[in-house]
Image (tube, rainbow, N blue to C red):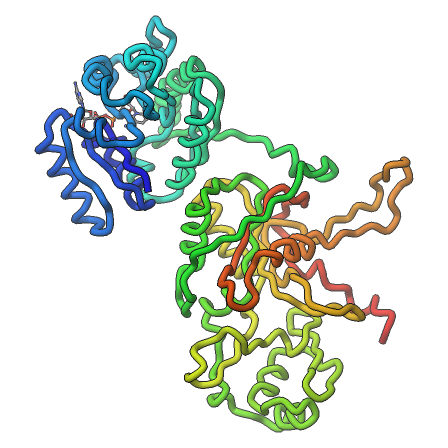
Amino acid sequence: MTSIAILGGTGALGGALALRLAKAGHRVLIGSRDAAKAQAFAETLHAAHPSAQVRGFDLKAAAAEGEICVLTVPYAAHPDTLAQVRQHVAGKIVVDATVPLRPPKVGTVQLPPAGAAAVEAQAALGPEARVVSALQNIGAEKLAAGQAVDGDVLVASDDNEAAATVCALLAEIGLRAWHVGPLANSAAAEAMTSVLIQINRRYKRVQAGLRITGKAKEAEAGAGSPGVSVTPLRGLPLLQPGDNLAGLIEAAITAAGLAPEDGDVVVVAQKAVSKVEGRAVRLDEVAVTERGRALAAESEKPAPLAELIAGEAAEVMRVKPGLIVTRHRTGMVAANAGIDASNLADPAGPEMALLWPENPDASAAALRRALEDRFGVRLAVIVSDSLGRAWRMGTAGTAIGTSGMRPVRDRRGETDLFGRVLQATVVAVGDEIAAAASLVIGEAAEGIPAALVRGAVYEPCEETGSADLIRPLDQDLFR
Ligand SMILES: NC(=O)c1ccc[n+]([C@@H]2O[C@H](COP(=O)([O-])OP(=O)(O)OC[C@H]3O[C@@H](n4cnc5c(N)ncnc54)[C@H](OP(=O)(O)O)[C@@H]3O)[C@@H](O)[C@H]2O)c1
């Protein structure tokens, strides 16, 4: 949690920012020319969101108390506000959102003689202030709406570390930010606001914004990976049916200090998805049929469990005492149709079994949509389970649901180091990513249900899902 002073926090942009930052768990200090006005405003925010930590101060007190200060005052008030807070911001990051608009000609670019308002701010605050320019192209109404913002933020600063801190902070409140170079480059963002105002007027748009297009180099098939990182997402509570898994994962990503990037993959354990989707079944409530009784007799498993397995299986492939190998209704081959009885409710409670999600690809897609909306980047999501592999010992993380990626990477036609054309190389990249993530995802007591994987090379794709990973039955050489 960081203490963030918003100087001009009673206004349109400052107020919207205050709310988002408070909701993200930060302590917000509203700074105003009038302390009583700031306090009253803080109380309104607090009344609407009782968990928000917001208080009101005069400008100097807010700047003195804040670890980071954000400046959101009209350009006319810029010099006076800077002069008031100068002595309180030495060594601190000061985010300047000011656009040097000169009413009434706000649709015309009119940059100041120094080149940019943010450059003027640096001059006024002195070299010890770490001025970062940001947010000029994000409409306050969009931020206030609390939803995903369809616009990017250009961040300019001479202090790379300060710029990175601000980009991470913006990611926490759902904004995708780009560090676009030195503070002087703030001129481009400041000028762009008048351009966007023109677009709004001429094309009758509301709060036009800016989007940076293109894709990350490492995500291009064949470009190779700069290296893969796998970060565990910790701190999720014990999950219950109906929990907002996307919201909890968002919070865990933020708590891990991560700002998701285009191409990142979120891998989430099937157990977590199944729990929130209410796929736990009480064994004493299962109606056992003749089919379940027969499978129970052959496998020596409890009849209700055998019944569930039979229900989830498209085909029971092999049975021996203690083991049932099935082809799950999704087509995946899995022991016991993927049904699990570990890590469920308390041992004193009724015996439970946990089934795979109804449609693991749909679960992955829903999670991806929510996370993409929240972070404004293109992601892939994999629902993974630890499965045994034919003729190999041990289990490995396997993709049972995918979204946003082609889970099989066909490298046939590419050339190897010696220029030979690859003839038969089809890589199960979905399974590889799931396996990498399973190195940190907890199986038993660790309680880490998800991980963020960065740097994996895969082909983004909207259409396909985990079925691509299943070898068609007519290609089965063993039966
Ligand atoms: N609105 C947007 O969508 C948006 C988007 C991007 C950037 N910006 C930039 O962010 C800054 C703030 O914009 P805003 O729309 O939030 O402004 P605003 O609502 O008009 O004003 C923000 C606050 O500035 C304070 N202020 C200080 N001196 C002032 C003066 N002489 N006249 C009026 N208010 C004064 C007021 O707070 P107290 O009365 O409490 O002191 C006011 O609540 C501007 O530089 C703007 O260009 C705005």
